Image 1: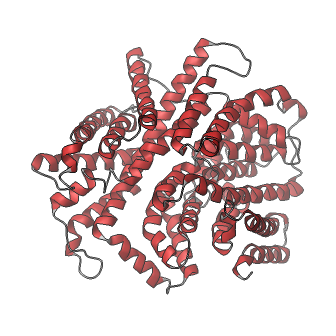
Image 2: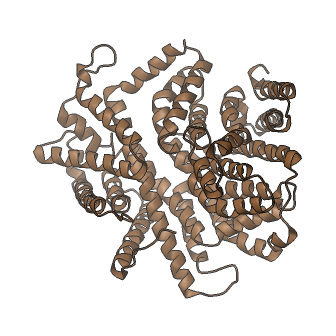
Image 3: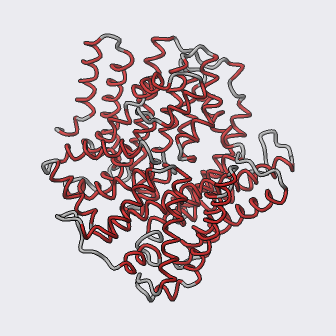
Length: 594
């Protein structure tokens, strides 16, 4: 849980502010249509105190954070208050005062992102701003014709073409609600319910402790949407359990890192990527969820097969009977996530509500369940602690994602204003000779490099903005191109030299991160092959439209991944390894010639 300040006054202030943020985003769902130049600036005003001030201990950073948050909030509220008048300006700033407000907004967004996730994304955004301001002086096709300062800054700050663009709208209207939903579930017994269900389902199997990690991380990750958060939470339970049963440390940490990374490709949340994909592709959320389901199952199948191969090498034991959850505990704790999930699914598929409305109903259902616990006892202090945890963690996570999306929106805005995105698309097509597969490889490398330094969602947004149009021009369906980029943006969670999930898991268990990374790459081989397999076997994404062919593609790709995993992990000699891997690749990509 995010810790409150010791001062009662300060603690009360942050709880009140976090409650305001949560209530504001829920109210937007139920309020109907609110002008974008009102809802989106107020969204920024709510998140700035959490992104710049909350939890900061160093005096200098605290003071500068307070100043930046005050300036940013004032500028954002000014935009919201004057939304009607600004709409008549059509993105053109009037007077020095408005220019100052625009500069303040952009500077605060850049610094907020820097403090939230480090330098790389803000640097790219700052370079894009410089290109927009001075790119007319660049000779050749990569220059642009120039845009008046008032129009350039105005489009980015007082119109819906920059930081208040459609990407921020996704953060306001959908991502925030699902993040709050995850925070409410995590504050109660749902996390323990995931662990108990996983323990009951897989604990008795060979390699059971590792398989418990896979199932629990898939379930938990489907709502947390963060590989790092997943490792830190479920890993604190699963990794000690594995090492206690004699599993090698590198294997225990690798299993947790790989399983936790898979949470970001498992519907419904997908690290907020699914909702960004809705906006960028125009494909309904339910269709994206259906398309993403079978590839996610394939990923966890490959991990499962890898664990079985390691079991033959190390004789991995299952969870002892005395450590498995009792049936009563499984039934009771599973209700803490089944009830909210049922409300979500009923809202979307039964009642036909929008995803955000369905998620809001699920938030309310989850909030009611915070009153109860697994022992079915009433503990007022526990209820208050859970409510505080849900509010604070929800506010912090909403603020983190919003800081990323606001900064990424600057890049998207500049690409649109200057036409740079079209030029980069042409460069990709020319560099690949107009061929699809070389373009896929170039895009995958770009995703890996960018993903090393920025979160998955941000890497996906930037890569798909420049590479997505090239891939669609070369023959991919838009959703196919977006899922391809999103999966490869996740590579850096387990791929050296920068592999966040591996670093955290290795640090928690006290093992060399490089050993863990190499093991994780073999276990998580599906992360490298499935995105390419989605291109070779497009039927795998058509579960809703053509379920028979989708299931046939699932079986074909599953057989191929099984052979590859068996070759990499199970076969310990060179020739069998090469033979099994070659056969597995041939089966996995057989859609190219079937």
